Image (cartoon, rainbow, N blue to C red):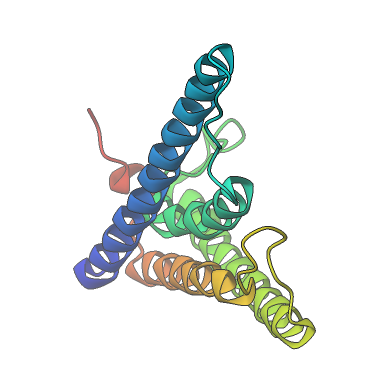
Length: 171
């Protein structure tokens, strides 16, 4: 696989990780506000939780998780069952690997297509998050990019002919 595509997948995953970190920070702040509210109620006070917390977490998780898929594919981190191929000839294994990579690329593009349709429908419907009132369609964009990049990584791996066992990093 080309180094450029792998680098793109890695940078994309890091950006997804940054979004996940913001989710953790917002969750910690919200839990802290909940704990402070419990204490404040003992003194007759009140500390409000973060408004729209659920909206943010739902939209951010939906944006961040797909961002990890291309890097997972680049590292051949997806589940593979070699039970039936353990004793098969190497050429047969390479052929099965290439076919599965091409099918993975096709599946990712298929999902990207449907996600584009979902984005367009959500945008046309003017769907807003319930509390914050944010437009929801922009959060589809990272998923579409992620699926396209995942497909590109799979295609690059299929074109390189690099066997799966050699691309898996060993500890």
